[in-house]
Length: 173
Image (cartoon, rainbow, N blue to C red; front, side, top):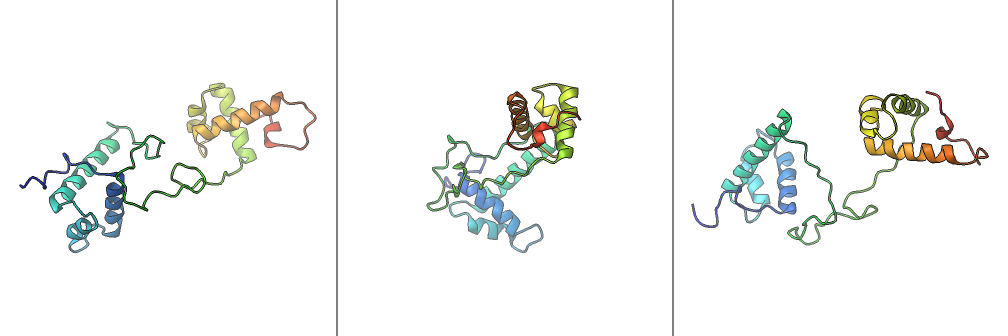
């Protein structure tokens, strides 16, 4: 093995190379003739051996995650992430969030979800948003439950003379 064909376990893969690899895996699914040479062609600077090693490492990581031995990685960007190795003009769009992904529009809470929130609040108490989201309002994340709770408690502290009705006015599960 020559010096420029070190195994991918020792070779750094940039964010851009990983993304290109992931996209290529979906473009050329299992059973595609010449799958690995086609995927390798998308990754300039990587040998077939490095691509196959990287794939084996990915499969190993997925098996560890599926078995519960490793937590699911968080793929969101943080402002300190190293994206310097990305190809020019390939940086993610920063349309609204500034973090690289499009911000989704919020979906209003239904009355049913709010009542489930109130039941969860009674069962788990203020602050246990993770259990409320897991066991009561399963359609919302713990962050969404915490945000809803903040709005709910702020609304309860306001004067009774509200401008208009709100779902946060409902206090009985």
